[in-house]
Picture 1 (cartoon, rainbow, N blue to C red):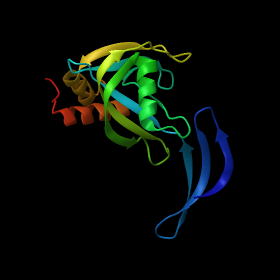
Picture 2: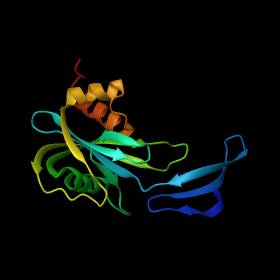
Picture 3: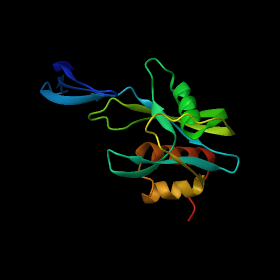
Picture 4: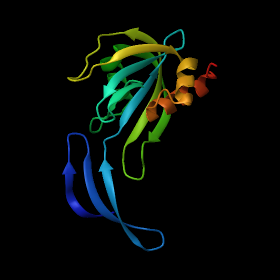
Length: 177
């Protein structure tokens, strides 16, 4: 992609720029790109197969959402390190066992963001260290119930829906009725 507007806009988290791409048929098209550093998200399961969900107000959409612990990658940071850090900071948890659930791309038509998903088990408590402005309520749901909520639209956050489905599939857990 060649940049038409290399300066674009640089925010605290994202950079937005406009550029021109060459299409397979030889035509050119102008596109907007939102560069995001990516992130990591964690399905944390306790020994009763309950998943840790965080309910918080999301100002951008104007309401509360239930999400799994997640956060932004720091430059050069391995996604598993991000996942461990965010689980501790947001939920006050550490995990002895980690399994990758793969990655997702949130909106590949405009965002560069890739979110790495993990399953964390054998949890122990540690002290949470919320960032300024983070006001979270921890909720524990059986994974089968959380799956039902993901599938019926009660849980709306895309990374959470996909991560719950992947974790439940990996563990052979079906949504409850």
